[in-house]
Image (tube, rainbow, N blue to C red; front, top):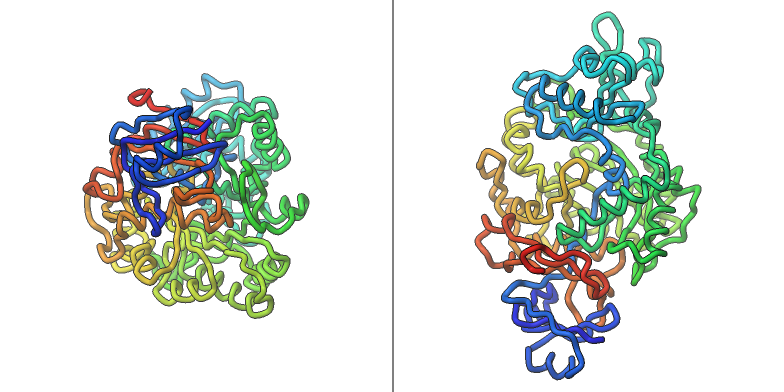
Length: 533
């Protein structure tokens, strides 16, 4: 049956027809877009009509960097993102411990820079949580974590434990581990945390997908398959949901090298009308700015000589890029600091010179400290940066005051410059690092306002249209799905998001308060708000 959407604003994101009055869908795809009269004629008398009641219909949002499958596991843990003191954090973990049978007490989204105690937690702090179970805390960056004494014993972290390359086991003046682990050694712990059984995980994954739908999201790039320690369960769960018509989301998976090499997917040529696909490989080259583990060219603001460091040797990294690029695979590469970004671009330039035939559309994830020259070279190489613009809101004041200083903080996530030079870019919030926040991300890209209300680098503000494109038309490029998604154009999939306002024209301060009224995937309504039902 045909469905007619009318009596609202159709924001197509298609330059050939930027706005329309009505739209018709049939069999999961868009049949036509245009004037109300033309679409009434196309729909015919037997069609279903959805009255938009003055709302704005957009292409479905595509969140191009997150860890949805890992976030599903985190739903079982204690959320620490609202804790302002160490005592509050300990109490939150203790309350969680009293209400779970899990053998290890885990908390996530701990942000030390929010604590009024003005210090990091220690294993002695965490020893107060419970007397009989190990305790593990995941930093909000996800690039480091903290263990209590029982957890260190369980995972064999001692003063003599060898540290893998790219990691740090923090120690006190006596050489004893403090409980803090960074990067590679920390990721080893994450992969060893107990995982839910397949049946439980399937339910958690389905709940998480619904949460993304509630935010207007119709597609995601779920990054790092394998880092959670159960790639088979994750992929099988997605496949089960798809087979049972319970996956109202299009999922582009990028896998860690070990998982990717085990699965051996074919190079992606196009992501069409499919719900889940392994589309590429995920690589890391540095850490997190707010954890001061990202690799910078100049020292962090509060250190004389600490610049962070790469998590692997340059030669090893370049070999991996060459391996996957030459085979025709897409690579999503994590790079926050400018030293990391330089390493990534240089590696891709070298491998493209050796294998110029491949249009791999590699993504440079985060790209937070990119210079003007980096952006120019990305455009030349066809690299798509994905900016973490919500950093400006969440940590902008602390970036200016603590981490990188005012000058570097002002140009972090240079989406405005990328837009002005015609470099396609996307944006993300890296869930579970931050909650699912598309509209907040768009508003922050446009206003560059921090949590304290300061404007951080006004010259890097994007247009409203450009910020929306980062979640729609530009996002489709990354998964080679621009023929099927990203704009409301006849022939494309009917993946759409209905908003209470047109966020390309409202005052920028109103973008984040806009309500998601409806989310539609393949012509099917998968979420409807209470106010629109």
